[in-house]
Length: 172
Ligand SMILES: [Zn+2]
Image 1 (cartoon, rainbow, N blue to C red):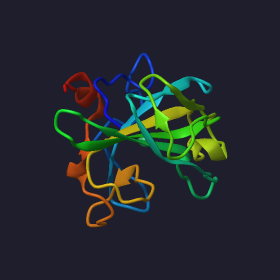
Image 2: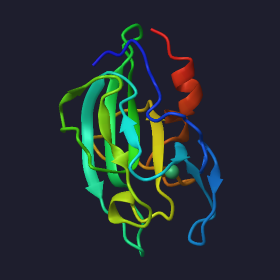
Image 3: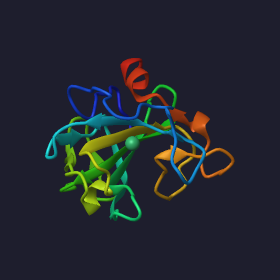
Image 4: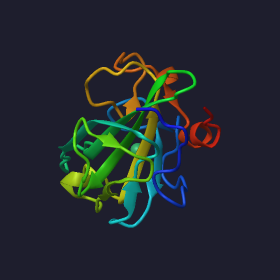
């Protein structure tokens, strides 16, 4: 669905956790690149669609203490009407998802709320936060990742955009 404008999923949009492209280390892997922005906010903060689009993913991938995950994750497909190019907005670690798969959605429509930390819906991350990403690669009919590990081949870092400048500079 075409979108003539974009807005932020949460206001104020303050990147207070991992930022886009940040190299994240863990014990298991040397490093991975974070494919979005983490917005640390109180649980229950409302999350809304950044533009007009179609809901192509809405699921709870519950995390556990042993294996963290997305928790509630929604992906919306958008089209830039002047270029015809598709792009996708990804919202992770949310609960009370109110969108319906394959339905149209409009700029500012509610998607859900930020889930509490250390719950399955939050993916079992410590802090309540929204993980927000912009993907411009091909839609693969799978849930998209939050991290890109070198040599893994699951996604290409160049298919991901820095969300804030992408939204700030969006024109049609
Ligand atoms: Zn994140």
